[in-house]
Image 1 (cartoon, rainbow, N blue to C red):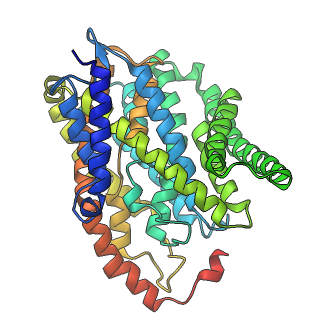
Image 2: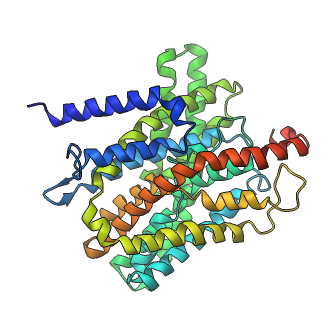
Length: 432
């Protein structure tokens, strides 16, 4: 009998061949690659052929899921940083500050209120649910992010920078929920949460991202002057930067996701030759796409019909409120008075604001936070409830956003982005 592992390798190889050769057709359809991976994962899971199983004897291997999703996210947020070529000025990053500073807390608190008022959760569980589902995903949102380093579109920039930053800045609220689960007397740990999980961890992430990336770039440049590395190995410098930035930051209790995103920004600005970070970006994107296949296959294999049906009503409530009310209204509130940087308009185009509200894609980042919570105190009925609501929400996002992203972005390019380019003055100097 053929080993299941060998069969899995064959299936994954065949899937990669099909989506690669068919990518030209798939890209023109209202269909995302993630949706294809998800469907295949369902067929490979316990509801199908049973070839992929993270559950053994009803025990879920959350650590495997955590480590895989962790690796995918850090590679993805580094890619987000590499894509962004904009000066670090508040006026340019105003949309990012609004999406992180206003939209993120609004989303977390609104989801927490839903969990408390409608899902029968206590405040600790409800806040944890909000922290898990509030961040948008940097991995599955590639179709709506910046296409390359020359892309200056504000919608794509906002979604790219939000995806790169909010996966890191959701962590304080994950810790808040975990602390509250362990001790419902907030006075015992709230000051420590402010000092360590909020202030220190964010500051350490920013500083370590800058210091480590600059140090590695300096070392590379010095060595390059003496002897150039082998061309086939040179792109691995990007992976080294990701892993070293993340690990060193985690060692000092900082947010590694934040450090890796900042490292991507620093690397992008550290080379006079623009082809250098572009080559790193292309390599990182290839690695990210490969890991995305494995992650979404795992998600599909996790899904079980009975528990999904058990929490279907609760999941549907969360999906409707999050996708159609919380995110859109949160974006509308967050962008009040926002003036576009590349247009004479006094306010952001309503269509752009609506698309910001719609493209709140949930995915691998939420899987990571869920798996992390499993290993740090989330258990019992609350764990099952939060898990299946999260899984179902991610599946709904893969389907709904995957189908709608291509036609909506084409509509945006045709009716908003292109019109702005033809009516706006040249703004290249503004971004130099």
